Image (cartoon, rainbow, N blue to C red):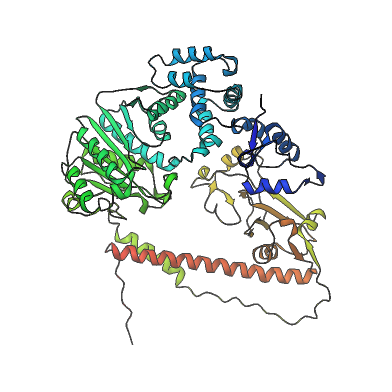
Length: 624
């Protein structure tokens, strides 16, 4: 029996590093001063080198290479047998779900008998097991995969995201796209029956039905072709209820992704014609077919299918939500079979920043559109006119969004005046008095590593802080060198409970981060938590430089990625104090400039919003 093997790409995934890093490991046999060469390849398949899995895991453990502390547990999921297809492995995993023992302990007759018990009607498994040609290596791989996974759904995800899935080049929806589609389907379900309705799925990536069906009362898969049987196998692995047919009320989900325009429109037309009472249809496809204007026969055909008024809402999704075509924008239609409208709701969700996208509000807007309640306010959707769409206008114009309620004049005036109070103040100049000095023959410098080894400096790691734990009335600041955690404040009791071992800053500590873009800041207050990868640098007396000097050197003069190699000048006490005072003034001056720049930004945006809302009038300056 062949030993399990890994490719270089598999090893990179196992170690949690880039592929090029593994090649570098092969070229550098010395690790921390010891000779630890990378394992030799044991075979080559189509110019792809393969390495024995156990040797690789042992080498990673011995050298400490990589970023995965659980590599021994994850390795079995990556050592896919050579020449075994993804669907054969999924079939074995589905068969495993119906048994109570390892597949390696079953004979061919045992496996076929197990498939008969799990799939008496031969809808997804029995035929595949009878036709399956697999050796002991494939059976053992599935047993190892299940052992390394937290349940069968995770084992399936590892299969499809691992070497076997990569070989097909198939890409699924992003997490954000799945969440939005779930929100729309949830709105359709609540409109029909709050207790849930069956979901009928047609087309789409194999991962789509599993994502949208996880909350469904029942998943309906129509047909008995290879794609439908493959879908049922995955549904069985996830433990979801699946059937071949259902009666209304139900939600029909149609995906026309990856299809030619004409074929896609034909399938959408079939869905609209087949929608009955107590049915909601959800279509997902390219925005070019569902949202943008068409030409010629395609435009006339789409207008014909829309003329009955079944379209209730249409949305354009942000780009990058389908990994198969990450530059392509997607669109969705929401249709109903029990009401018509000549004023569908539309929105371009790509016009909203990610921070302003709430799937719960998307679901609420779709619910309002389905109910036809014109009294409610919408966060994203706005009304469109069907006659305009039928005459060639885009269904979802780019940038379409809901109108906002007019804010009071006082709000706009307050924003303008608050920003103007900062910009109107004169900025004190920064002036540093200097004189010529005799100079030194030799510039004395010490590295941060030397300062640390001499006990003149301490470095403490930051902690991984969850920004969602922040509260409005907290008192424990969370700092990061680059300012990404600015505004996050924790309750002191939460800070002590959640991060009991986290280091706190003291007044005058330097918060810094290394790497490709080193930066630093001085914490004058102390008592703050520091979010990793930022660290705390604490200077002791005799270091020869002050905290503002250290921060300035890191910000403006650090030239390497590794902080222990950064150099600081070795100054006498008088020169160090004078330089520290000057750089402290420079830091204060820079902070004031940043505040004025932020106020200028607020002033400009407040003026635009206020004048656009008719709440603020700009008084022209009198010309001489």
